Image (cartoon, rainbow, N blue to C red; front, side):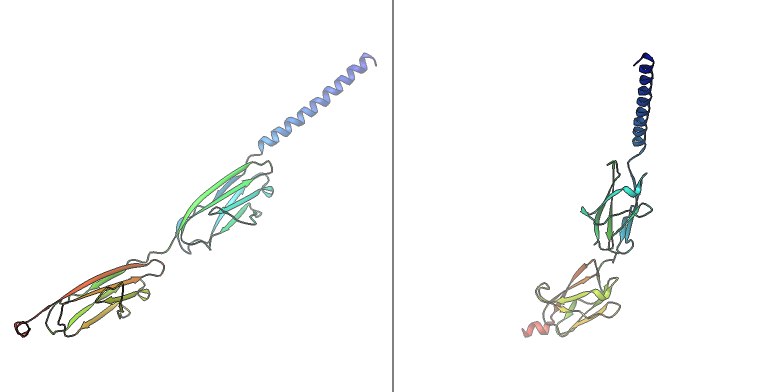
Length: 231
């Protein structure tokens, strides 16, 4: 092989090497330009039961069809989590109970580049107000043998849910129901009192949030001189 042939072969190898090196750097540049996925999602925050039924997350990537998606709700991984043609996934939250919940998303591309996204939200019951027993202005000092009156109003936003009871002993041991009308008004009478009397009333009301009120009424029986002398 003469010098000219050697020179030609050397130039050929150099050209091939340059092409291969260029392709290598081209591949490196392509990989560098392929960034990790980006995730955007709704931030539900605090809301009432039934106001929101889902949370939508969106993944953006150069090859979104190759994204591996992992969705966890309250640290429990959900099955069959695939992005739609718009790169979105809708998380169904209709089955969640009131309280604080967490949602986490992991998106991984074909280069194993990962992105994580998290949010927390709180579901609450609607405010139902409080339970209150309002007493009328009736006499609690009673003449011996006279009748005692007890009347007033029970107040709550859902009066039909109320459990309203009374007792002249320990109300936690024994009690009777208090009758009320649709507006919560009640009236009771205790005829011909001869001894002091203590009445305790308690009401518990609420659909999802129960509140309680308790009142105690003391009736004092005053005996006349004739009653005292007869004793």
